[in-house]
Amino acid sequence: MKIALMDSGIGLLAATAAVRRLRPDADLVLSLDPDGMPWGPRTPEDLTRRAVAVADAAAAHRPDALIVGCNTATVHALPALRARLEPGIPVIGTVPAIKPAAAGGGPVAIWATPATTGSPYQRGLIEDFADGVSVTEVPCFGLAEAVEHADETAITAAVAAAAALTPDDVTTVVLGCTHYELVAERIRAAVQRPGFPPLVLHGSAGAVAAQALRRLGEQPAPAAAADGTLTVLLSGREGTLPEPALAYEEGRLLQAISPAR
Image (tube, rainbow, N blue to C red):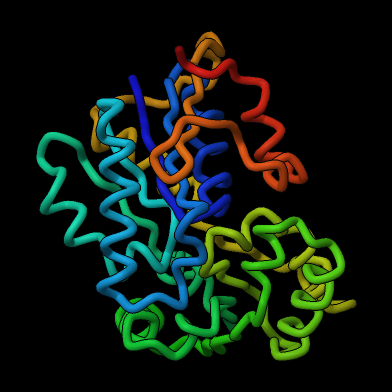
């Protein structure tokens, strides 16, 4: 089984690590776009063009499924990617985990990029899945960029700024950008209030990995032989994991895999 994942940068690491843990025997293809990142400030049309190119590079390696490991790319490019690749290659998008977060009753905070915060897309998810639950949208200025470059000082500052915008009574935080899952425990430590119940964090990586297996009719097999290979594509060129990826546990987990030949 071969599963491809795509993003402009290392935000796909969380979902990749989740796939790796569920199926250590799966071959992995990571398709990144260092030449075109970040995707967030691009127009939807331009972002879609970049995403299609990155997906095409992954598709050339004939994966059984493709995970779009980016919330922004899912919002803007998922229809185009599915029209281009399905039914031959199932395409799985990444949606903020608002529904399971709201099921806990709240109050809920959604940490997302400034472009996503307040967007019709996110507001639609809140209306559909969080009716009657108190939801605060928190724009996280600079956090995705800081995580992308493993800039410790900038991560600390961005997390603190977003935590200051998060109401004290919040019991649940939705990590609405895949990059944020790489610093989830730092977010937890910043938002957790003394004397309150343990904060609940909801990311998307585990659900996305499980959905990819379901689309393929496969089952988790975490005890399978860890012989899956790793191929890294950088704007279509075969390469290695970007150095900042190794600052995170998820990146170090993948580094141990031998590249495909």
